[in-house]
Each structure stands twice: as C-alpha cells, then as structure tokens.
Length: 242
Image 1: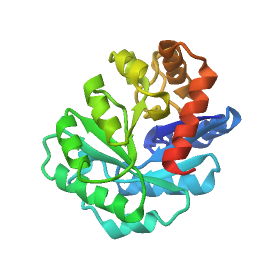
Image 2: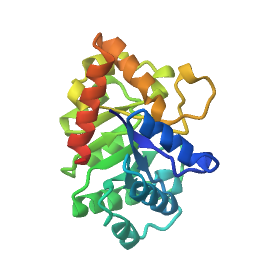
Image 3: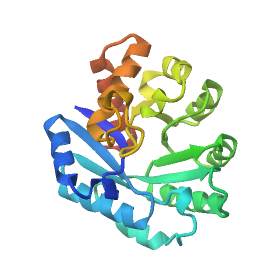
C-alpha cells in the first residue's frame, strides 16, 4: 500500500473520468487524502470519501479564496464525517496580494484546535509568517509541497510538523532536505492534478503517480522503494489517525 496525502480529485479536471482514476488507485493499492480548498471542493471531498473506501478527506479554505466568507459552522458540519482527517488546505500565499489571509489562517487553526484535527498547511513565500503563527498553536500537521531550505525545514520539524514532498522536486533542488530529514517526518503527495512527475510527461497528475516521488526519495536516501513506501504510509497513519 502507498498513500498520496494530498490530492484534489474533486476538481473539475477529473469530471469526465473520476471513477476510472479512483478505480486505478484501488487496483494499485493507492490510498489518498482528497483535500478541499473552499467549501464546495471540501463538500465534494467528503462525498468522495464516503463513497470510496480508499479515500479520506480534508476540509478547509485555501488562502487564494480569502474573499469567500469562512462559515465555521458549515465546516464543523462537514467535519462530522468519520472520513475527515484534517483541516486544510489552509495557510498563507504571498503570490496573492489579497487582504485577510492571516485572519482566515488563524480562524482555521482555531477550528483545527477545537476539533482536535491536524492541519494541512499551504505556504508560498511566507515561511517566516507561517512559522510565527504556528508557534502559538500546539497543533500537528504537514507543510504541504515543502519548498523551503533545510534551515526552514528544521524549524517546522521542531514544531512537530511533517514535510510533504511531491513532484515539485523535479523543479526545485530539495536534496538536502530529503537527505537530512528523518524518514519518520516525511509524507509523500501528488497535489494532483498539478505537479505531474516528469516521468509521466505532460499528463494530468493522478494519485498513482506518487510512486515516482517515492522512488526519488529512495534514490536520494539510498534505500529501497518499499522502505520509503512503508515509512511514509505509517507516517500518514500516525498523523491523520487512519
């Protein structure tokens, strides 16, 4: 079994063949966490998780959609599902200049604390602020699509967070982070339909392609594919309580 801890199967990119994609996951022993980025995608993620045994869900609002009203009660209602394993995708993204990101981030951290759920953190060009905010919360979680350096990684690890590694490693040099980070603090993910591993060319990304991320981590650490797959699956079980 392998696990993709960050997918977006509820996105419209899968509207024509979603069931077929999920069937491929099942046939290849792939479990995935479908991650919401606003209320609608969060609701769809919950519905997928209820329908398929190999899918879990996370609910939250991405910083890009800060203009959408955050209705805490609606998210609490979604989180009643037993297949909900985290609050996310939440965080800060300074590519976008929209106001209110910090307020939205903090509101959702408070929600995670209230519901006793881990968080899935999105961070782009905002490591200092994300770290400063997280220091005020004793939460567990993962820094999705980690793009920082080893020094920044260590700060997240000191707070107890995991690092999410995906196809971004084809674009950024994360060798130092991957080699130095304890294997029991690494999660693997796809962020599908985005960040398709280069081995799959220009295809839309799918959870099954997380195998390429696992293989690259194994190569860098000079261990086997199965060792990485087993460790990262156990890490996901530990964090998300699945």
